[in-house]
Length: 357
Image 1 (cartoon, helix red, strand yellow):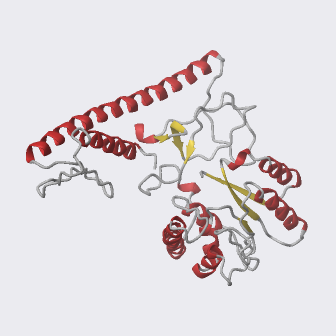
Image 2 (cartoon, helix red, strand yellow; image 1 turned 180 degrees about the vertical axis):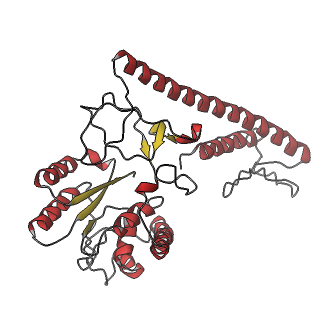
Image 3 (cartoon, helix red, strand yellow; image 1 turned 45 degrees about the horizontal axis):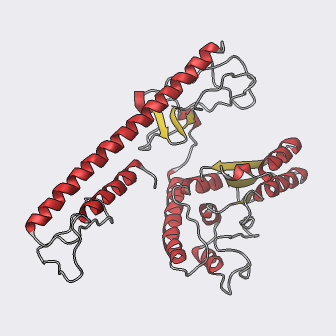
């Protein structure tokens, strides 16, 4: 929603509104039928001028609006250029610091889980030139890499800045070179089922997000853009494993077999809600499907997941894991490092899934 396109469109809207306000219309003055609305070619963004009663006024306002739009466009170009220059300067400063600190970047293989940390490594130059770098707001100029590496600050100094971005497929769904070994072996039927589940999440979100905006339910958060996170991770587990979702894991519940009706009963807190209306909407759960109810308090599901993992470890012969989700903002809660320590010390089969919230 904070894309440069939307920012530019908002600036254009302000420019047209300023142009329209140059000749205010008296309340008694009717608008002639020949008046036209000046609108940009953007869906659902009608921009209209007020008081254009003659063709001459219409042209005058259109010319003024075009001039304002051109000025706004130039200003946005300058801002984008300044941001790119800052990113380049930051990268150059990082390289200068690395040279002055005496760090030597040696090529080497990526560290796989369980491997010994060795010499300092460099992130390989991505193929495709500029297309090999991310433009994420939080990590501009981050290099894409198909190598899943673990970085140890004590052995890999200095750490790459920004950290490389691991990915397996590009923006159009094609496998990136070198990522073939990491791709899971999924059959067509499973892929279609996962895609169908993601579409169901999207459709459910549309209806109940609108219901919340209309005041029909008290609370709702969509999973827009995160459907694959919950469904892909839930599909990798067995039905005997435990799920501890947060707000945006509706897909994991649907993948486990919860129906639209069950989720709707909980969201509307009707008589068929198993929680009897004691939970906020979208705080679903199911004992039969091994889904622990969503918590309103941030981060409290992580120690619970560590405890469930510890129980699974103590039950001999039980091949179970616990999967819990949390956002990067939730990572500042005290429960998060506590859960990490519990799981690490006791060797709990617990998966902590951090997704961009």
